Length: 169
Length: 209
Image 1 (cartoon, chains in turn red, orange):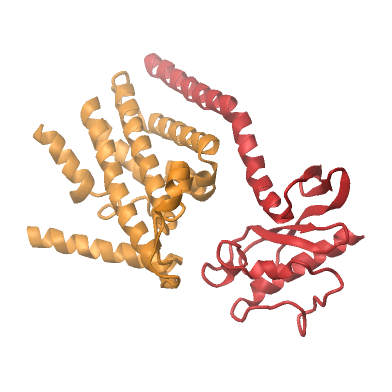
Image 2 (image 1 turned 90 degrees about the vertical axis):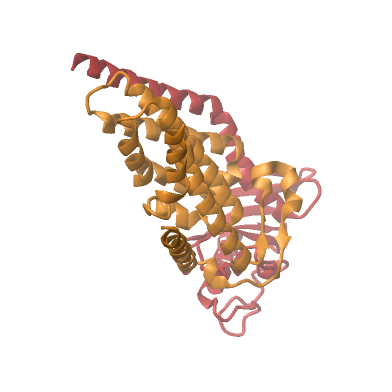
């Protein structure tokens, strides 16, 4: 009984130490990976050779082109998709026109609603160049909604519209 | 020697964890929608199963009495967590896609049940072979379902191999057609392919006996 207890204690310590030490050694690398992963998407959006991103907070960056303000990159989240939240990053130029939009997280139906993903279709690129001056209402809008994926495309358009509205205030 | 080959046969065919015991189906069905994720999960399963079987049967040297379950849970949970951290540090994009199901493997009855049945009465070598062969048994089922679902469902094969192999993998993608049979990518496709595979396996086994 006593021997068993000692072995269990020893085992627990060994398990704990191995997990903690690997994590401690790799923590910096893991955090860097996370950052790179989201920065990679954001950089694609800005569509420009040389620029600096200055973080305001975790969901908003300001773009500087040789120290001149040239727009923002910010996150917008929609809860009205078909299956959970849709997370978007939106980049604008200094006059509020959209430079690009990317969906970074979604769980919309594969093959139907996933056309919002740039790896599946170019649909999301239609927003480039749009601004608050466009018509964002459902009917007669400037947006090409997709039959069969109405809920998803509306959710994305609304998320972009709300994001722009919040940004312009 | 014949004992080891019997273990190998059991793991790969007769007692295949995925086709006969129907264990660990959650990760199996969820991850098998493309070849690369199926391959990666298979590799991780082989490594974790082999190492855990070796460690557990080693610990059993000291623990003669039947007190294995806490030991097994501790060892398996540790190994899966280590694999998870490893993937996060070196294969981040891969972790993005299979990370969730990796964690499910701890609770997955497949590993626990297997380890429980086997290690209590076997020496280290046969435990190691058993873990490895069970892993291979998982891997080939994963690969077949993964290739079929990716090939017929999205019309490609070996896409996104660069997340596993680095730059070498970028040219490996083969495209058959731009349109696939959508059903196979969706969850029902996983059940249908697995069902067909089980039926085929049963047919072959019945014919043989």
